[in-house]
Structures are given as structure tokens and as C-alpha cells.
Image 1 (cartoon, rainbow, N blue to C red):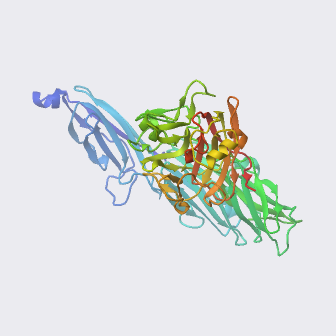
Image 2 (image 1 turned 180 degrees about the horizontal axis):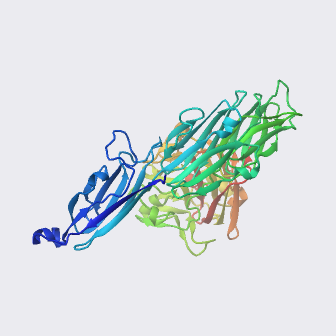
Image 3 (image 1 turned 180 degrees about the vertical axis):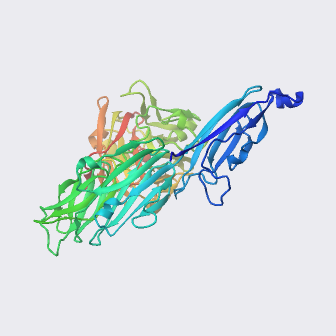
Amino acid sequence: MKASLYLIICLFISSFFSCQDENDGVGGKGIGYLTLNVGTSSATNTRAVEYNPKQIAVQIVNLETKAVVKETDDWETWEGEQFSLEAGEYGIYASSAGFDGSSPEFEKPYYAGADTVDIEPNASETAEITCTLANVKLTVDFSFFNDNGFKAASVEVGAGGSSLTFSMGMDTEKKEGYFPVKPLTANLTVTNKNGKVHTLKTSIENVKARDHIILKYKSGDAEQGESSITVTVDESTKIYTYLIPVELKEVAAGLDATSVNAWSKFAYLEGKAMVKGMELDNLLVKLQYKTLDAPEWTSLDAEWDGSIYKATATKLEPKTNYQYRMYYKSEDTEYVSDTITFTTEAQTTLKYGDFDAWCQNQKAWYAIPEADATSFDNYKGYLNSFWDSGNMGAAMMSKNPTEQETSDVKSGSAARLKSQFVGIFGVGKFAAGNIYTGHYYETVMSPMGAKIFFGQPFTSRPTQLKGWYKYARGTNIDEGNNPYKLELEATGGDQCAIYIALADNDGLDGGGQMYAFQIDNTLGADDPEHFKYKNTIDFSENNPNIIAYGTITEDEAKGTNGWQQFTIDLEYRDLIRTPKYIIVVASASKYGDFFTGSTNSVMYIDDFELVYGDEPKVKE
């Protein structure tokens, strides 16, 4: 039977007008008469207590006023009925009564359809609504498991947080499931003749209303061509048959795929192996991986470190689902472990790292586009700015140590960082031109300083930070404190700073958003337990919250001859942990945190980007 119903609505406009007031209607639009003629349908004429998808509810809506002028939960009850309707444009909406199709259900299809019609005086119109299946139909073909004598098989199919389970040999085996139009996941659990349990997870994206999806499983040893998707289209639904491979090789109790550490382009695979009580030749042990829909496995030679087998899968695609298993082949038998499913990380870009977009408020400049410039506080600046600087405090003295540069750039716009004294009548502080991922929280007048949050939420693991900079350092350290002033003078002048860090600590609430650390010049001493520091954050290995860190070299910090590209390797101190925050800082005076440097130092930066390489650098 076609997955559609037909509802024919005929609108008859009476040519007989009984009196002038009734004919004019409200505003003199005229009154017509609506008659519903119901065509042939298999819908029941009685109102069942249980849900009947072909009992169609109808609403007639005035599209000008948005008012529902007539509705029923069973359109057949309107047959032969006539009622007055003011001239105008109307929407007619029909759907299965008593259910909206938003959750998965067995044997519970949801039909819907709509049309518009203009009612004009002295004219008649006809609207035909085709109510078609408005959700996704899914069935499971268990014939492969029945034919091969599997003990049990079940498939849990989910959409939007809810699911249905189809089980071989149970009443759900031949049932039809109906799902909302959302991506589907199908989790297969199957028990073979020897009682070994296998699992397989499949994702189905881009589903559409009226799709009929058939999950059909086959042997993983079948020919490659059988793994393609076969599409058949009939008059009512689009039928997609997914031929999904399952594994038939014997699962060895001694093979164990123990862990996967997946980055964006590579994954560290580990496993243990022992078959029939014998140690295995590590030259014959393989670690295998593939995407979920790939017909073949990629094998890697395992490296034995004395306790576990290791291998690294490379050239992976970010944000992609993969499977991993252990494999061993003796003279007469192939063994595999249970399969682990993993997903590679996203390659998150460094937001606004090109420094092309800027906006200004309260005299302070910000390296964010105007469209994102919201949630402004007169004392704290833009609360949602990804990049910030000391401009909010300096702008009180009509200064902006960090500004947009439009002429001396690598591309588009750049950031100009100029160290300078900010104050009046000799009262003030040295302010390094700087920019950082975080939020300038507050200017403190006594003692003069600031409260600044560092780090923006971030969960990917890049391997490098690249970009361009141009730096002319001041040789006269005219502002500052010892021992930092003495150190700079001994090296011939000021130095700039560019560095990046990834942290996984809990962080601090900075007014509705979490940040990694805070600089608070009002503190008497550092408070690392609460992620607060008086002048500068400790990025050394003494800080257990830092996963990775990298900076430009000392020679690069002393200046450039024009624009120069830099590459900073992120040195990872832990390859397992994933970050919660990213900290990127650039400063025209590296000791600006201690109010030390030269007022002649100027740095330009442009086109910062994160790089996701094939292998991270490890801190020695």
C-alpha cells in the first residue's frame, strides 16, 4: 500500500447573498461557505481509543491573523458539513491524530501534509492535500544470522536520544520501526555458535522523511562489492538497503584491544595477546584499524615493549569514526579480538587568528568582529571576546597599546603591539603592548594593576602554532624592576614573547564563562591551588595543570629584520590527557607582567594558525 493518504477539500463560494451585512463580513471582505468532500480512504469512521495513523486531524488557519478558524481530530466527521468562512488566504494542515512522530515507535507511522487556498467571493477553490509518511521507516533483516546458526542477535536503533530494539526470534524481529527524521545509530550485538559476543556500531546520516531503511547484515569475508549501498525507489518510499559486514573469524580470549588514544590525524593503539596459553611471536601480531564502512582492515606491525603491543595509526581523517582490533594468524587459524570503536578529534581552528576583524568601544580596541561584539561591560569590556588585551585599562588614559594595523601587514589586517607608559603627571604604569586569549576583568587602582583571566575553552590537540611577526625592540629599558630590568639590559634590550599552552584544570568563573587562570596584581603571593597568580602564570613542569607548552626562541625574541614567520612546537608533557583551555599570548615586552621593558618596543603579528601534524613533540 502506498505510504500516503489523500484529503480533498472543496471550497464552494455561495452565489446567493441573503443580506448585505453578512456578505461583507469583517472589513467588507465577503463571506463564503466551505464544504468538505472526503475522497475514498481506508481511514476508520469510528474513533478508536488506540492510535490510528490514518485518522487524520485537520486545522484550517487564517494566514493573515494566524487564528485557527476550524479544526477536527477526524476529518471524516466533516463530510457533508457546511460552514461560513471569511474571504482570504488559509492554510490547511493535516496530520495523524494523537501523535507527532517525535519519538521512535513500533508500528506507528506518522502522516502529514499541508496546502494553502485563497477564498474569494463568488468563486470556488479546491485544495488537495497528500498526507505522506513524515518519519523514517526502518526494518532489520536477520536472515544472515538465522542462516548461519547464530545463537542470538539484536539491533538497538536510536534517534534523538530514544531507541527501539529489534531482536532475532522475538516479536520485534519482523516489526516496522518508525523514527523521527534525525541521524540514526544502529548497535548490533550478536552471539555466535561458540557463545562469543560480537558488537558493531553503524551510523546513518542524512535520513529523510519517507525513507525506508533496511539493515541487512552479511559476513565480513564477503566480496568487497557487496558492501556498497543498494538503493531502490518505489512509488511510496525510498528504500535504502545497507549491507553491513560482521566478522566471522574466531575471537580469541587471549587477544585484547586494550586502549586507543585518538588525536585528529593519528591514534596510538595498544593491546595484549596470548593464545592458548602461549606467548605470541610479536612479528605475527597485528593491530588493525578501519573506518566503520570500510570493507578491508589496515594492518600495522605490533611493537612489543615487554608488556603490551603498540602501534600508531597515521593519516587518519579528523572527526571520523574508526574501529580497532588485535589480529593473529597461526598456521591453521586466524584469531581476532573484540572491536573497539573510536572517533578522531576535530581540528579546531584558532578563532580570529588572522587579526583581520576589529571593533572599538569606550575608546578601547578589540580584535573581534563587530558582529560578535556583544555583552559589553563599561568596566570590564567585552565579556565574550576570544582575544583581549590591556586596552580596557589603558583606554581610561586614552591609550591603546594594542591596535589594528592596516598598512604594514602580511594579509588583511594585523595587530600592532606598542609598549608604553600609561598614566598622567608621572603617575601610572608601564604597559606592554599585548594580546591574549582570555578576558581583561578589572583595573585595580590601589595598588595599581589589573585582574586578567587567561585561556579560552578548547578541547583539541594541535602540534604547532604558526604565524608571522615583526619586532623592533627598544634597547633602553626605561621602565621596570629588578632583576628583570638587569636581565634585559644584559642581553642588549627588550625582548618580545609569543607562546602557547594547553591546560586541563577546572578553571575559574570569570563572569559567566570559565577561564583557565587569573593574574591578580592585588594578591600578596601566588595561589596556584586556586589557579591564581600575582604577576605571571607558572608554565613550568611544576604546574601539573599544563598539558603542553611552546614558545619562540630567545634569539627570535630579540627582534627581526622585517616580517618573519615563526613555528612553535607544542611540547606535550602528557599524551593521554585532553585540554580544556588554550592560552596564546603575544607581547612586545616579555616582562610586561612585571611592568618592565622599553617604551620603544613595537611588535606586529599576523595570521596565527594551529597546525595538526602527524606526531606531537614530547617533552624530554
